Amino acid sequence: MTNTKIKIKNLYKIFGSNPKNAMEYVRNGLSKQDLLEKHSHVLGLRDINIDISEKCISVIMGLSGSGKSTLIRHINRLIEPTEGEVVIDGDDVLAMSAEELRDFRRNKASMVFQKFALFPHRSVIQNAAYGLTIQKIPEKEAEERSQHWIDRVGLSGFENHYPAQLSGGMQQRVGLARALTTDAEILLMDEAFSALDPLIRTDMQEILLDLQSELNKTIVFITHDLDEALRIGDDITILRDGEIIQQGSPQDIVMRPSNDYIADFIKDVNRSRVLLVRSIMVPADSENGPKIGMNIPLEEALSQLSSKQAMEGSVVDSEGKVVGKLDLSTAIEAIRRPERSSNDLQYR
Ligand SMILES: Nc1ncnc2c1ncn2[C@@H]1O[C@H](COP(=O)(O)OP(=O)(O)OP(=O)(O)O)[C@@H](O)[C@H]1O
Ligand SMILES: [Mg+2]
Image 1 (cartoon, helix red, strand yellow):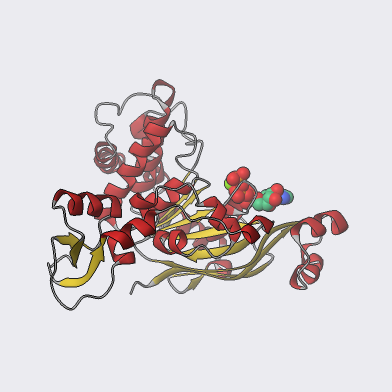
Image 2 (tube, protein in one colour; image 1 turned 180 degrees about the vertical axis):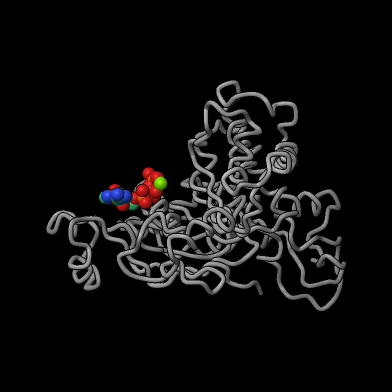
């Protein structure tokens, strides 16, 4: 089990002239639309509860306007809640003094933005070193530390270039290097890859996953892209109209969508790539057939079964111990696109 790093409890955010007053309607269940039409207030978030595990990538997903940015901005208190709590490592973020908050934003939680937000008149290395410069770290040390991260994100040789001379993907690498130089334990990434072309975006996801396997940061990653969420999330929270409609691992969400809205959302995902052997294996008493790793996607497992012309395989853990079995027909059934029953058509 992992420890909770960031705890968000009963969080509400209402935008408008008198949010406290509007809370009463919201608590009584008034919808976002009615709150807007009848009381001219915007429901940003309603009763959000999330435990974000340390050293994991937690994805917040939802369509435009669902409240993703509002939520992530509460974590470093760029937004004050109307009600609720944000607790990080046991510290109440809402109780922090201005100085504590500044310190927290500089040292503990770095943000990576969708539009990169680089300084145009500073070089790559100066941009990467920004967090250290404001911490008054001596220039030489700041440069050395920044160089390390510039190299690590694959920008060696571009230290003295300016943002305008770089492609979008390269600019966001600078954004990532800047967030990493301060050694913050928490990375807040609001649609950090959304502005990039699909291929570049996949590259960036790979860089992030690669860095994460080494750095084990607590990453809150916002996206409206399902494939991205499934690819990089250890767990996923889905928001709709300011409310959480499902929380779970990518496996949970694809295997057990909690309502028709999500079922419809995931209907076109490549299930053989998302689902892992461990999610559909069944108990086995003995070894039978070729050995298949429990954490590989079904796509790969099926190809292993077929290359051995086997109808079933023994599922093994990382030490090679048999933990279950996978049979061909169950695997094929699991990756079949689910059919919607007629009453599914009634979803909102
Ligand atoms: N400062 C504000 N004043 C009034 N309403 C706001 C404000 N900020 C956000 N909202 C509203 O709160 C809701 C959630 O907005 P938010 O920006 O968090 O959505 P999002 O999921 O990040 O969307 P996107 O994918 O477009 O970035 C929306 O209805 C939005 O109009
Ligand atoms: Mg947003």
